[in-house]
Amino acid sequence: MPHSSDATLELAEQLIRRRSLTPDDDGCLPLIAGRLQRIGFTCETVARGGVTNLWARRNMARPLLCFAGHTDVVPTGPLAQWHSDPFVPTRRDGMLYGRGAADMKSSLAAFVTAAEAFVAEHPEHRGSIAFLLTSDEEGDAVDGTVAVTETLQARGEAMDYCIVGEPTAAARLGDTIKNGRRGSLSGKLAIKGLQGHIAYPHLARNPIHLAAPAIAELAQTVWDEGNEFFPPTTWQISNIHAGTGANNVIPGALEILFNFRFATASTPEGLKARLTAILRRHGLEFDIGWTLGAKPFLTGRGALVDATLAAIREETGLTAGLSTTGGTSDGRFIAEICPQVIEIGPVNETIHKIDECVDMASLPKLSAIYRRVLEKLLLENILPENTPNDHV
Image (cartoon, rainbow, N blue to C red; front, side):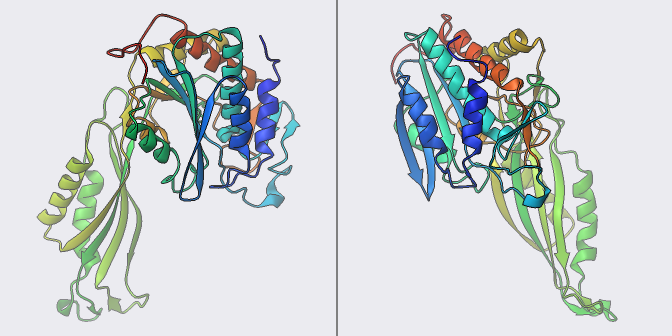
């Protein structure tokens, strides 16, 4: 192999040293771009709204396999609770500690070393390799990956496969692949009542009392049964508020914040229609503001999933499970322009926590998994269905 077993670890440490709190990249992207340029990648900066993004590509032929991820990290929390400086990568008891160690600077390092090793061994490989990296995933995510996908879509540049480096493993590297994510649909519901003195309820309309039966029905509603890959859609209230703070005033309005986490078995339009129908059936006077945070996406068994399952098995001996659990990821944007999107990365037990860390021994294995996927998809004579082997 062209790289030592410590190559991924060393690059991960370089990235952790950079205080890349959203949306400040703090030099991570130039560091990665410099490595990629040396092995034949053309690197392009896509900047929008104060966010820096990188699109890097080697070759222009199909199929195109893209590695996607983010350089930004969440805040550290109380520094006094960390056992070492979160921006000083620290090796301790076989673990690498630092903010972003698991989410997701180790994956970024493994992406780079996998590409370096693959290109060194197969400089004339078929197809193309790309990197889509952002510094705005942990924040609002409005000027990050979505800005790049919109740029690519506008110029007709398509992807065939995408691997997102989110930390997906539950206990051991390779035990879980995320092959989809649920959608997120939020609502801000205002139920109208009539404020009045609590001793004269006949002169007022209490929106809490009015809404209670509808809330109970919504909480008990089966929205769908899910499917092979997704659990059933859920509806949850995240906040409820009414009243002036006084205990002798019937409130004039009730505000409820809620969220659907929905499977591909449902649509945003269908969920909206069913919820509003329940509210109307209970005779409520209301207003709703909707926010579609993410559409669900799903990649079934096919070239990318099968190649990744095989790569994991060859490197770890594990048979990975397919999962769609967890929150949203930037895969939701990439799925708009790429038919096959999965996520595979290190153990996620410590992400966003104090003393975030990753098993050092897993890093060269993660790089090897990514490299094997490249070999399976870009060396073997297999193309995605209906994809010509031409230029884009």
